[in-house]
Every structure is written in structure tokens, then in C-alpha cells.
Amino acid sequence: MHIDEYNNTSAILRTRHERLLRERELRKSFRSQNEEVFGNGGVDSIIGNGQILTTETAAIRQRLLVVANRLPVSATRKGEASWQLEMSVGGLVSALLGINDLDTKWIGWAGVNVPDEIGQKSLTEALAEKRCIPVFLDEDLVNLYYNGYCNNILWPLFHYLGLPQEDRLATTRSFQAQFDAYKKANQMFADVVNEHYTERDVIWCHDYHLMFLPKCLKEHNNKMKVGWFLHTPFPSSEIHRTLPSRSELLRAVLVADLVGFHTYDYARHFVSACTRILGLEGTPDGVEDQGS
Image: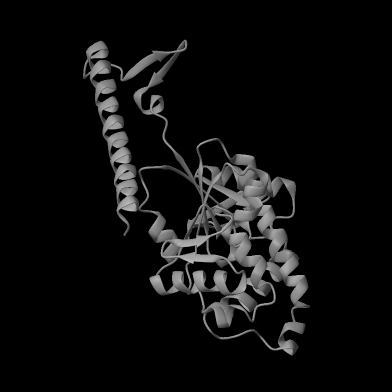
């Protein structure tokens, strides 16, 4: 590393370290001042702008909006306005249960078709108790978006199984219809995120189902903090270039502030695809696209 780069990096780390230390000292000072006023056994609150605030709410917690194709709960309808909710089983659900230092809400499809307004309202209320927010997709859209483009096109390609043959594609209509449904579904997820987004939120998009989501979100508000993580392999550029929509998908993902993969090899394949297909510059840290 060049000496100037080393000095710049050291300065950034030092500044970040100093900021974290300063924030910790402020929290200690805040707590000690509060205990002096109310005592350790008193009401843990302060007065601010004419309102009584607890110390927990006075220090604003950053909120994390997790967006995935499926919610961590499965819904079963028991009546016109009655639902039974059960926790889903899966690697993504298990992994994210460990996040307890952020105010987290989960946005996704409930896995059930709810065409009526009463059902949608009652399910939304039931899911709110689980800190979940539903995205309502109809059966036709699910068939083309989820069963079609996600599981019939992307999943096999990302696992080196190749694209399905044309006669198999015909059973789920055309490739373009599936791709259009994929983009439409991603926009519907984005619409729900936009409805619930507040300033300072961090949005964490997950998996190959939502590769267009970063683009949809940033087009609405380019100040959003958006990350995207892939939970499958990312294939080599030679395999990815066989996908007709290869460039659109790559550019949609690159709009995110941070892109993550399971292994270094998958990240390297993604960088290679961006350099060979899009002509962008790859670096050891990622991909440079228009200064980002």
C-alpha cells in the first residue's frame, strides 16, 4: 500500500474510533446525570421539549427494515378476519433472530393469497404483533415472479444448472412475461418499504428474489441506506452472461450501498461479471460505478 493511502486509511480509522469513544462517553454522562436527578430507584426518564421521555427513547435506536421474499411467519386463515400465525423454519429466519441490538421490522410476502380487503386488514394487524409487514401478491403474479423467474430461471442458473429449455419455458408462458412479473413484484415490495420508511432506517434486502429492489428504492429516495445480500452462490461471469437480463440485474444490484455474498469466490464472480459484462472497473474491495 502506498504511504499516502496508509496515512489516509489510518486517519479515517482514528476518526471513527474517536467518534465511537465520544458517543460512549456521552451515553455515560447522560446516564449519570439522569441518576443524579431521579436516583437509581426512581423513574428512568427526562423532560424534553415539554414531553417526558424514557432514557431508552431519548437515545434514538436505529431501525432495520429486513426485506425478504417470505416473512418469518406462516399465515393460515381461520375465518373472515381470523388468522393463525406460526414461525417459519429456515436459515435466513434463524440467522436474523440473532439481531437484538436494533429495532427490526420484517417486510415480505406471507405466502398466502389474500384478495379481499377484510382479510388484508386483519392479517396486517395480526402480523404487526410479530413486527412483520406484509406484501400482498396475487396468484398470477406469484406464479410468474416466484415459481417462474425466481425458481425456474435464477435459482438453476445461480447453481450452475443452466437455463431451462424453451419447451419447458412455454409451460410458464414466455421468459419476458416472467421477467416483467419479477420487476413488478420487486416494485410492490419497494412500495411497502417506502410506505413505512423513516429517516435513519437501514434497509437490508435479501436474496435473488429481490435483485431489482435496491434500484426501485433508490429511485424513490437516493438517500436511503440500502444493502443487498445473496444467500446462494453467484455463478462465474461465463454462466451469468447466458441470462438474457444479465445487465439489468447487475445494474439494479449495484445501486445498493453495500452488496454481500457468502464467500470470497462468489464476490469475485460478481466483480468479474460487472467488469466483463458492464465494462466497469473492479477493485479488491468491490466494483466502482459512477463514483460509487
